[in-house]
Amino acid sequence: MNNSQRIWSALQTNDVDAVTYLPCNKMNALMSHKPAEMTVLDITKESGGLGLCFGRSLGHKRSAMMIQNTGLGNLITELYTMQKLYEVGLPIFVSWRGYYQEPIEAQIIFGSKVEDLLNAIDVEYQILSNMEDLDNINAEVASCFADNKVKVFLMSPELWEQNSADYHNFGAPRINAVQAEAPAYSGQPSVTRLGAIGQIMDVVEDHDIVLSQIGFPSKELYNTKDRETNFYMLGALGSAVAVGLGLAMAQPERHVYVIDGDGSMFFNPNQMYDIASFNPSNFTLVCLDNGSWGSTGNQPTLSSKGYNLTAFAQSAAIESTAMTDQVDELHKGLQGKVRFMHYFIEAGNDKVGAEIPLKAVAIKQRFMNAVT
Image (tube, rainbow, N blue to C red):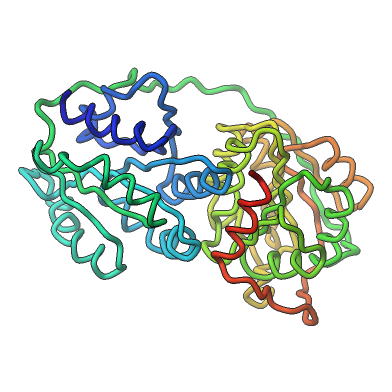
């Protein structure tokens, strides 16, 4: 068994059935030995991959990440506000650029500081540079899940016996035709986010999962209708969609509704493409568009300047969309399980409801107990 096979074997031994992957040519040897039964979720951004892993873990599935070490710089917020805050285990296998025989100056600058970065953010790591470093890899992966911790495995190019060709075919542009027909909007919404959440919960079934974005969406969902199958995001703006997608794939018998806002969509537009790419049939994103950054004081977003999120969703090839400020059309879209429900609301936050009294780990454990 070569070094690549030993890593895959450790993942399979520990019931990891999917990895999120952002390509690096230093991982070609590893990826060329991927077991046929292992699912690879191709991602466009490291934070999206971590969100998918987190969502899958909430649905009682185990995942791992495979990324380049420069991607760790894109994950600091998400690591703290998902994996570490909620205490969820995740092994992250990282190709360590800039460490061994690195010809690219920019890689050396970051690669030389990776250990300092991981120490600073209190993330455990292990260097894998030779066959002996893999002797306990099964146990090290097992400890991630047993101890509910993140661990980074820094894989030096020294680890691979030889360079290997790409494990997949080369990409080539094959672009589908897209027609977007999204009307303009200049009406007057009749409900705030708090009222809209109540309207959403009127049609959500007991068996369904509802996941809410950080800040006021989660607070207002809690005060409208707290339930064990609600999951409240307490951090990582722009990650709710990825978590919801991971949950939907891990819990295919339940419908997953993600309550999010226009600010989050503009903050992380990659998530639109992720919805279209993964496209689970049991997933609906409800974008409550008030043209404002609601949780930070209702400053205007790009939605206030004419940018149309429904048109964006359609151009990203999301298969079904609906746009309205009417509650009957909202209910029709939710009951029809559209992928992207664009609902216009008034700016303004609930000033009366209590803060969520549950700690992150309690939110996670209550939810996971409810979706077993």
